[in-house]
Amino acid sequence: MRRSSAAERELIARDVDAYLDLHQGKELLRFVAVGSVDDGKSTLIGRLLHDTDGVYEDQLEAVKRASNMEGAEIDFSLITDGLKAEREQGITIDVAYRYFATDNRKYIIADTPGHVQYTRNMVTGASTANVAIILIDARLGVLEQSRRHGFIASLLGIPHLLVAVNKMDLRDYDQKVFDDIRAEFAKFTEGMGFTDVGFVPISALRGENVVNRGDEAMPWYDGPTVLDYLEEVPVRVGLNLDNFRYPVQYVLRPNLDYRAFAGQVSSGEVKVGDEVMVLPSGKKSRVKSIDTFHGELESAHAPLSVAIRLEDEVDVSRGDMLVHPGDLPFVDRTVSAHVVWMNERPLDLDKSYILKHTTQSARVQIDAVQARIDLQTLADEPAETLELNDIGKLRLTCHRALYFDAYEKNRATGAFILVDSLTNATVAAGMVINDRKGQELDDALAEVRAGSGLTPKTQVSPRERRERFGQSGCTLWLTGLPGSGRWALAYALERRLFDEGRTAHVVDPTGESLRCMASAARAGTNAGLVTICAYPSYTETDRAVVRTHVGDERFIQVFVDTDAALCRERRPDADFAGFEAPASPDLTVHLDRMRVEKAVDAIVDVLRERGQFADV
Image (cartoon, rainbow, N blue to C red; front, side, top):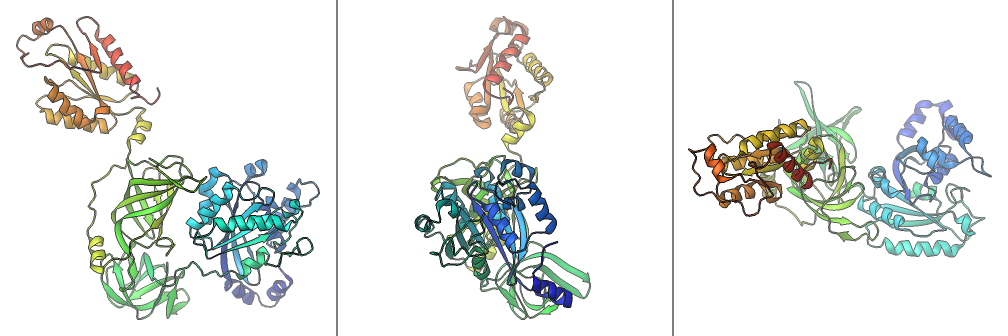
């Protein structure tokens, strides 16, 4: 168990209920420790937990046994680096959460990785933090990774930043080293939107200026220790208490006499008697009561979870939002947002995703990658996609309206995640950018009620089809005179591809027009099939129609150039007038000089050369 202070032990012995009430009523602060590799994040947190008696006794004994540091009894980093791979490599990989309490506050700590490839883990740990502690190695100064983490902390809307200059003992506690780092990083954070930026020189290994002061080693420093800063920093800064937003999570109906709407007050405050509006319906009512497990409240503010009853029987369901009529969120189906891409599979503009925002989900398509942030220079750069750990700016359009605020104004209604609808994996975390000034009530409600005005978009992209089938879709258009052997070639090719594990299909043209054949060819190609057509398209104009409909890069024309005299002998009743030989086919085969199997081999070679098969 955790070692309790003497005052705590005395209170527990005298009145355990009073101790529990005291602990329950303490203010909660969440903070995250970030920095470059080997800056000492885990050591700092381990020291913080140890010196505040926040380590369980059995855990402390295990750490002592595992420690292998020359001249030290405890390797404090092992308190948080719990994964075997972390201990083997001496780095943090996953986000480690730890908890401790003082007489003043309760704390949740997120120890996040410093490696670039674990940026998504860092974002996950920092997303709910009130304070970010960035460690900088006094020997190395401000690094690119230090700037990167400062930028991400600002992007995530963390209001307070504490820069801990660590390993001062390895620089002989030189004040100039600390002052130079402070000046450089303070200049970098100017205009980033932090409420305050603090600096403290520390030695996490020796415990100086972490919990206990290091006056003997650094008499020139008269500021707070790390713990002093955490004890005094305002927790509610960054919490929106002005704009009432209440996303409905669940409708409570235990009996015919009770109907309430459960959820968390995301921001602002609501009181009994307040007039509220329901989005998307626009219906208005007044708050009849605010209920909790312990009884009714006169008011509720963020981040309380409550149940709200209304005076009128208004239709409300999960995903709806209660707001004050004179203070609406922005309502739109198109938003711009900063996103952190968190999946090994890159962003695919050809497919749609599921966007989860507050308590609602909506189908969303990515209209454009507006920029990718260069994490070396923090400048915007053009990009076609986003890959794992990339941070970029996207424009997204949902199939129904969202009720949102800018993330910098409201972290609850300005944040969302993107989910792959096939794998159910969370692929990105997003922060809404809203530079629009305002919106009239009628315009907002009209947007909400408009429904989806978008052209439906597939949930399966060409890239995913290629990965599933091992091939890309294309149209093989066989051109030739009647009797040239096009149909025998088409079915022989279908058989060969099928036997090789490919997915191919011959489209039967019986009774079909050119337009219908072009549509069928495009449908099969879009589905990822090798679509084989031997339709009698005599003219270049007809074949150009199909090429345009299917797409030039997905259209492969094979000219079956069999001797005309032989064709007339085979098909004396056919009409040969008006046939135009293709000027530049992708392949020409002569079935009067070669066996069908050889022609099939030649076509398969062309498919491979064109990169149609994923294993080539």
